[in-house]
Length: 222
Image (cartoon, rainbow, N blue to C red; front, side, top):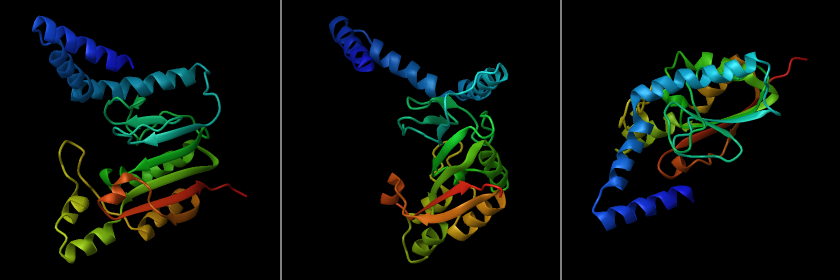
């Protein structure tokens, strides 16, 4: 409501006094979100603040739910985390090095993110996510189905080249590796996850490309 009011107010001022406050404000807001320098600063400061909080003995109330690589999609009751600032981002952070305490997170969800991570980083990332999950905590991953994308490309669907390599519209918008269920399951098992299941994808990407959805839980030592 506040954003709508500000937009209407600035638009009214501009039309009444022939000014350009709204356009100038929009440009400043765009810089605020997209600046590589500002986002690099945020990626260092935001996690440091959380670690300081934990260092002072200030713990979160209850287990957390994390939405990693949120982009412009906001999920209620989750901490929405991304590499860059947007209107939906609660925390700007490198998802490979999350600042949360071990055994403090109830649920991690990530949609079409892991294909953007270097293939040799991903096994380490899974171990990091495993550590911060509570026992039997849940991990949900959706990503492109590499095998199906290649199959459809070879059958003549030229659009699948975008799904294989990424659109590459901005730094980081490149697919660095491809996954099928077998390959992803093997990596999850090595990280300690159990009850690994191949589920029906639910993300909006399913409308434009073949996708995978894998659900699993943090294993509990007997």
